[in-house]
Length: 234
Image 1 (cartoon, rainbow, N blue to C red):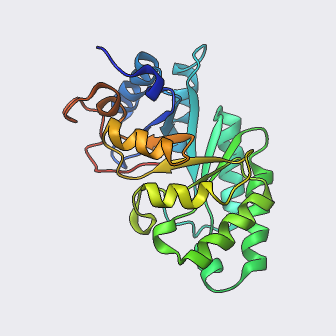
Image 2: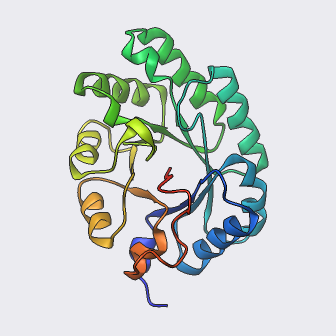
């Protein structure tokens, strides 16, 4: 099937639905290879399967920790991150405890960010900012602390709940506040090639989407590229 290979190379194709079974995950992994997606985003339990299936390909194995609420204690998240890396994960998207940030407990929040970066080891680590649930002032503090802690990418949203959807405005908000060596990932509600290009133009380096095949082929979404559980996107 004809598709936009340049756009595919910026998409982390996602299947994180709670009822996704082995066959569904394998389909997504094979789609990543077929279409040339940047990465396959799966739940931590499927990282060993993804590592095996994607061996000898250019597709990164991606997973997330602390998703979608971020309320696990830092050592629990750190253990999950280390387990994922040991199982073969190349990239980790992680959620911090936003309740600490919103409570003004900035020292504890910053300590957690440092713990998470340390636990990522050699893997690429991205922080889910959840901009949809923050004031501009809170978002600016989180971005500042995340950059200082050493995150490789900052991401507007988990694509779940209060995080909200990707928009030109919130991608630009991040891009304008990070140094050149920190990437930006957009996630949440990305369904079309037009949306994807607008977000890339706004400063996104990567896109997280469960509709990856639909985006790069111009399909109608009935190709199985989106999870039956809804839009769960890292």
